[in-house]
Length: 585
Ligand SMILES: Cc1cc2nc3c(=O)[nH]c(=O)nc-3n(C[C@H](O)[C@H](O)[C@H](O)COP(=O)(O)OP(=O)(O)OC[C@H]3O[C@@H](n4cnc5c(N)ncnc54)[C@H](O)[C@@H]3O)c2cc1C
Image 1 (cartoon, protein in one colour):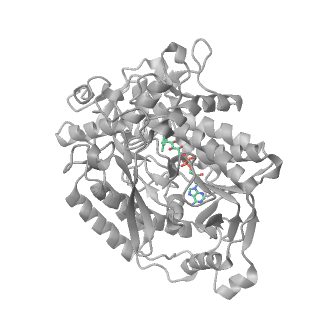
Image 2 (cartoon, helix red, strand yellow):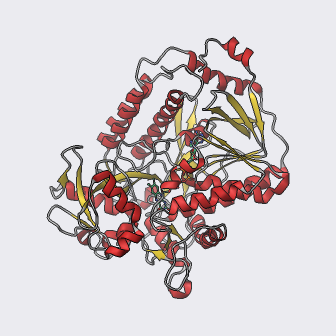
Image 3 (cartoon, helix red, strand yellow):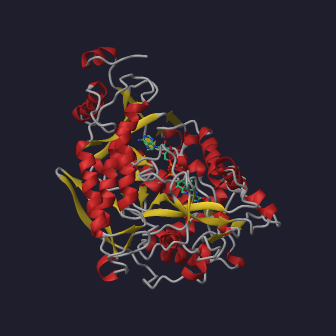
């Protein structure tokens, strides 16, 4: 193991490595892999694609997607593009940009077939065609699936397809932390090789950020621990605004006490929610769709049941919960179609859902907001695109429908891959100024060589998560959010970048500190945007403004970083056919 002592030693030992390619993708989840394939196919032999990822690709959060991928496959049997569009727009509480939704719906079936051609083992119906199941907020069962491991199979399919392309190179366990510019254009990313502790410039003509959602900003979360907002914040620092950040999705069914997701498909297959009186309470909140109402509505209903005393209490964790009853599902079907869910319940909770209820509570699961991009996934910085959960395109508006996200990753993975490749073919090699790169490299080595931090970054992370849980959960109000924002700012001002572990190789302490820095930045943006939006819409419910206010707030909030903080900006919602209406389920 090598210990850093001085700058001169670093400089003597090595110079900054430059890794050249035409298109560089950061992130190897569904969006990143799909983008890499499309860039490689568009450019052919003339184009080199690099994929930089802080985990091994198959450890990306996408692997844990469970329930399904939405697309209209059988219009002749009753489903239609118009129905998928309407469900998505209504689910979004009318904040989705409808041109993006239309594009999404039309491209979705092509992606399902494309994946099939690359080897995806979709579940089948009796007649041999691809099977589909119900998800929340859907008028028709349109989630394609591979039992309850859809993400794993999609990722295996895409990863093996990537490996067949000689012009795609993977850089696993590299942590990207900065966007480099050349004359107002994208010129590359700076990344740390976690394995060796070296820093390199990934110079490229075009870049795609596909780093996933803001992740574990809450203590009870369904995300993997590597899901943090570094990619989103990297774009924000480079001057690209963030959009719709106030909208955080709480999925109704996180297993108590771990937060591991129990897929919505378990209700799609017939499971029902029950309170401590055994009542199927969703009948009262959403008489028509009941347990399959959209996530924002089901989560708030669960929390209301708990608040009104009809929940249970988990003695060990202190969490209050309600039950998900899967015993009503045909046993053979449960064993076959919800194999992993049964295994999760048996292994992590010691209960068998065939005969016992599953304790659940709403869990932080998805971020509707992210890097502001146009309908082609392009950011305001020429040469830089964003796709997947890191991006806000926006087709999810104030509330995403289940099974639309994996599809979104595929659709905009493809679009951004193609657009970035075309851009790279038409532009020459960037020549970014050395100073900004050296400054960023120095920033990293300062952290490494500077004093150990006076505040424990792991404690900061845990405090941050508790503040978000207490002040920016599914129910919000001004007084509590003001207090939460004050606490976040105090935490941020006390935080010092520094590490206890001074080693170069596999310094996860260094990586974690950079992640916490980005978590502080992203939380502040979420908090400020949530305070700004004085209405209730989708996942953002304010008890002090309980109604949707289309006159004032049928618009997106953008947050742009400035020298002394940030400023707000707004974008109108694009409406093509569906006028806002009351959202009844
Ligand atoms: C438990 C769970 C179940 C889900 N089930 C479904 C479902 O059934 N259907 C559905 O539609 N959606 C589902 N979702 C949502 C969906 O899976 C995600 O929104 C989607 O997979 C995100 O994919 P992504 O490609 O944007 O990013 P991710 O899969 O999150 O990947 C992010 C990538 O970025 C890399 N990265 C991050 N930061 C850096 C950095 N600084 N430097 C380098 N690399 C970096 C990571 O290594 C990783 O490769 C589920 C989500 C969860 C958490």
